[in-house]
Length: 125
Image (cartoon, rainbow, N blue to C red; front, side):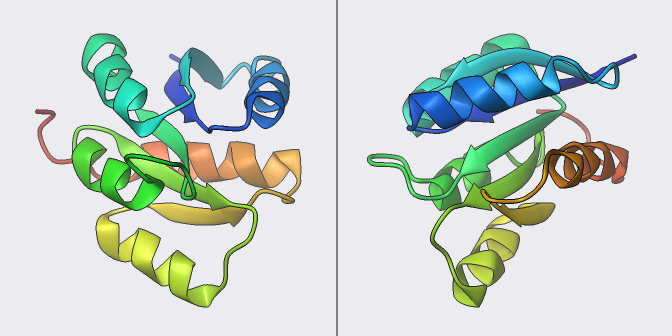
């Protein structure tokens, strides 16, 4: 069964490009996209994704807070375009299963999603 994925980013071009890439991977089913943390919380409740790929730098409910909201029911892979080691540490402390830079290769993103979905999971909320 494919991994159910929610993509969350406030940059529409990045979001659509990522969706287009991931839809060609038989292991992954993109069940929803959100352009804000608030929308992502609602979609996660409705669609119950296995993994969310979450941008850290969003207005409103940022990726760190969103990660805290989604975990443990949904595994989170945090992504950022302009971050340093402290952001990666903060994302992992918030409960993210992994951290990637936006400039990463497609294979890295897909493999991070697969790795996150394979982690032991507490009972879904």
